[in-house]
Length: 421
Ligand code: HAM
Image (tube, rainbow, N blue to C red; front, side, top):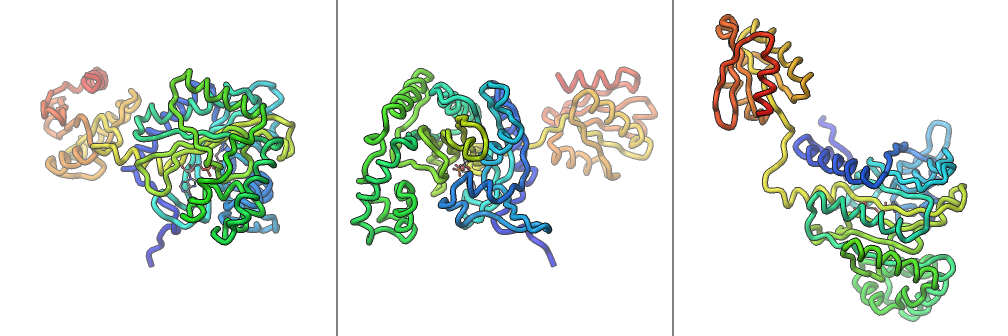
């Protein structure tokens, strides 16, 4: 019986993974230019890290975690996001000891037991970006700018960066109170989830997708009327620096984000090219989290980008599919030619060229077909008779121009010269 992949967990096949590679190359390039350094973290963590880090009342912790006991009876969870893990690593390895702003990034799969649909999977990939050690609005600005640069470098169309401030532990309680007062006499109209949110986390009612809740939320008190002076000044700073950098943003006072650790600045990149799951990236400031997870009181801010959603947009705008590069295909006819060809392939690869080889004996016609399927720019045709005359033929697959080259010590150099053309 055929065994298939688990629902909501996808294979990324080579015709698609080439675009993934391009996105990852851009990630290293853009984030590298800001001084971010790559960190690698485990897929599994102790369950309590996410319970404490993400928040007990979030959808992720309440309903979506892949949690199990290992053979020793310890409760482990497949990471549903990377922030909690990176904070754990930051604390565990005393990365704060350097005293500098530590800027880290990571790329890898996350796991959430959600209902799969377009743009929502149970295993999905995130590019995760985190920075620790400053509460200054310039850091918020750089973080948002890195996201904007990323998207513009990839020519992602139709994306808006929405920003908001969620206040801090000083000013948010008053806002909670106002929300509770506003929604309490409308409780009958709230969905079952929002009824319980009203008691535990009224902020989350603001981004409920249920129509009746959404309509009530539109007229709810606005967070910006409740921000304390510190939060107000901080947010004004972020907005004005972003303006200086000409980064277009839209203020969305209803954006509350689905994780509990956020304070002050939050942001999302939303796309008009996606359906219901329109957030390509989301993030914000989490100043109390390092302390909450056992470290010193060090502020932090970051975001995560959903790779599948980004790829969906890029695939939509791409006219021709990308293909893996192949500079040269070595087509051999006969045993002696194969023996010569496999050595030639090795020499060409050492020159930094992508070189494919005709592993299976085939006719010339079949070999040319294979060269086209491999998208080879050039094909070196090595025939038995030609080899005896100490010659090979190099064919430019686009122009069909053929050049006869002598088999001598300069052959590799001549071929690479023609490939660089
Ligand atoms: P998040 O909003 O839960 O934030 O996820 C960030 C992005 O991951 C989303 O905008 C979306 O593109 C993608 N994503 C989330 N869930 C799924 C899914 N089931 N299928 C496909 N893509 C998905 C976080 O994870 C925070 N840790 C971000 C952060 C970093 N905040 C501060 N630092």
